[in-house]
Length: 159
Image 1 (spheres, rainbow, N blue to C red):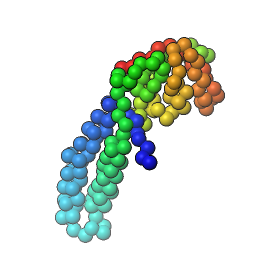
Image 2 (tube, helix red, strand yellow):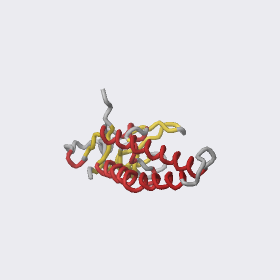
Image 3 (cartoon, rainbow, N blue to C red):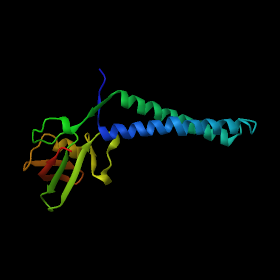
Image 4 (cartoon, rainbow, N blue to C red):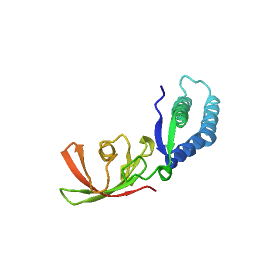
């Protein structure tokens, strides 16, 4: 059985853009670099050739990885999911740290689109796993390296 990879519409579009850039811009540039390096002669001691081949290997590996993720993706549009008042994949959650009264906003997204600096947390992170299924004004206890932290869910948005 294939495990589907959850991602938002934005995450899938970002992967498609990266794939297009790799195939249409980077791959042809690497091919030209390899051809130019071959013209320099002996390939055994040609650092430019080996560098270009290594770059080609990384590029082709990333292309395969993205194609695999997109073919196994489950693109979820949170605006089309019935609003049941619970934290779900794709929702944006405002939470309050009960201990120090700090407020945080996070959107729960797929692994590839997560970026903690942009408040995008992975569905597989401990924070997201602790928030999924909770309602407004409920308490989520999140296990962190510094111990358990309790958060009160203030707001849930499905945007």
